[in-house]
Amino acid sequence: VKTGTTNDFKDALTFGYTRNLVVGVWIGNNNAKPMDRVAGALGAAPIWRQLMERFSRELPKEQF
Image (cartoon, rainbow, N blue to C red):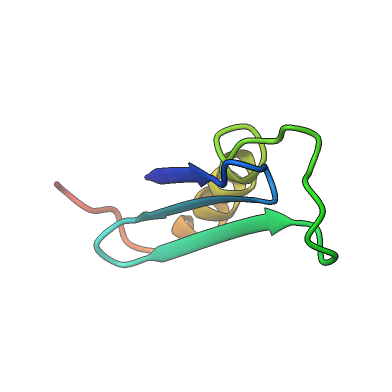
């Protein structure tokens, strides 16, 4: 997983993957105004985790 936040808090993101699945989440305002100091780890990451948990249920278990 990699999280990111622009310096002005206009964008926050989280990207992560397994061998069979890649998920990226971006959050921000459509009008390019800053969010209320929402960082990628606090805004996009929880959404990313929920998506990964949901989508990976349908995939075979992997050994890393």
